[in-house]
View 1: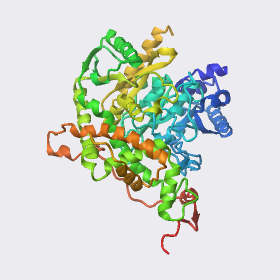
View 2 (view 1 turned 90 degrees about the vertical axis):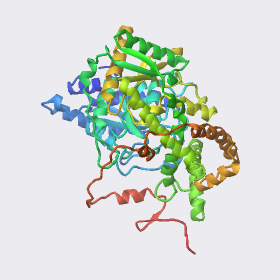
View 3 (view 1 turned 60 degrees about the vertical axis):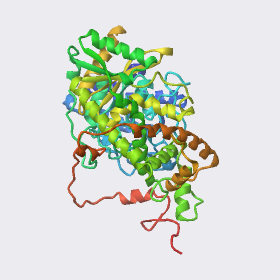
View 4 (view 1 turned 45 degrees about the vertical axis):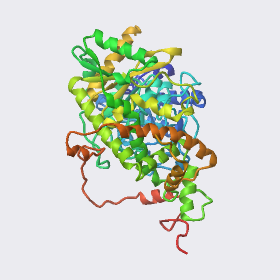
Amino acid sequence: MTNEAILSLTAYELAQAIREKKVTSEEAVLAVFKNIDENESDLHAYLSFWKEESLKQAQACDAIVAGSTDPEGLPPFLGVPFAVKDNLLLSGRRSTCASKMLEDFVAPYTATCVEKLQAAGAIIIGKTNMDEFGMGASTEHSYFGTTYHPMDKNRVPGGSSGGSAAAVASGSAFGALGTDTGGSIRQPADYCGLVGLRPTYGTVSRHGLVAFSSSMDVAGPIARDTRDAAAILNVISGADEKDQTSVSSPKIDISAMENYEVAGKRIGIPKELLGQGTQTEALEKARAYFASNGAEIEEFDMPILAHAVAIYYILSSAEASSNLSRYDGIRYGYRDPDATDLSELYTKTRSSGFGLEVKRRILLGNYVLSSEHFNDCYRQAERAREKLKRSFEKAFEKYDLILCPTAPGVAPELGKIDQDPLASYMADLYTVPASLAGIPAVSVPCGTFREGLPCGVQLLAPRFGEQEILGAARFLEKQQRKGAGV
Amino acid sequence: MERIRNEELERIARLAGLSLSDEEKELLFSDLSRIVPYMERIAELDLSLENEDDAAVNSISEETFLREDRAETSDISDKILAQAPLSKDGLFTVPRTVE
């Protein structure tokens, strides 16, 4: 197989090709690293990668395949190169969260979801760039420099899992793990033409995921197609005694996704999430695919969504300000060398260790938690979150699925997002509702639009509704392939 | 909505263990004086809930579990201590706090 042919495969297809001895894992790893050699300097998707170690692992995988009498019984991703976001720990490797604060931090253990991916045979070839501690939507807030969009170097790949999305979209990994607090898997997947799945809160263990906003943080797949997303989720999900909020959930029946029955499905579109830009064209395309195949589509009112961004930023910043208080220059991470006493040690370390966006969130979090504002802001936001959850529950009594955009449009140009922080927070309107409600959401590509850039749509379902949204997303994927004559 | 006062944010920055440069102060205070009033609009929301139990909100409403409390041998402490900026004899080193 040529390198080009190898790199065009999905993770699922590559795993199958390796099991069937049509290609070796070593060839796949070499193809990926050739691609990295050629593109990484323009892309900056990775914060670290390790070729020699990956090749050794690939050879070991190939030996397992050669010695196997039951290829179908082999681990599902045996020998497939994957990337992992830098806020997921991998024992013995630097896990910086793209922050000066953790520049030299070497993980002492491996995150449960990464461990599970490795146990499924995946070769983790590197750690990907991100917005510092997951705070941002463009990967421009990385202490180590921005990641660029694989299709247009003047644009951002989205964020905060921008490095994972750029790596998968450019052929520098066959799949990746990202993390999603307010949309950090779905939005970069959308901008880069990929499938991004935010699983039901708790479905994937948070053990080894560096905390940002603990009531909303989840890890999940950034994948080349819906089948890959489902297969990755099946591997990384499951209750974990090291994460008290983790739950066991039904595994996705991947073959059932192929026979997803659209006819008779009731699909709701919240009027508050109807936009005006490119995302409307993508949404209309998806709506037409569903409608022409017999789904009932209805727009409905969900007034609480108008406040979703405010609720999200109050709660996530409050949790972040608490979670990030652990960075004090004593137990791990950066320590300012000039501090003379303990209080100076804290202040100097934190002031020079954190970037501007992180400071903005810490200040916002401390503000809403301060005694004067606690009731009006934090407590009120908690109650509003509960109301939003109930509004979703009510909507799902009527609809099987909710359809809406993932982002306000195609990937923005570099530097544009940072100019107005409030406007950039508002752009999270489409992704934060599922985060607050703890429900699953998938972003799936819905064609290319202005300047050839991809734009997708988002599908939401009640808790543990991954089978439903992945089935519907698979349907959209197949409709487009039909449309493109593939 | 009242514009957020600089002194208030300076106090909050102090509580957060952050000292801000003049440049950062100017930028962050101007950002936050727009962001905070936007957030505070949720105070006007009518959130009268159906019954009193609903007031006892918790962001993680699902049942959580406890794991068995058992002793295990772990070789991780050296690795963890190796991540400390300064340590000595198996202890974290901090500036002197008592004269």
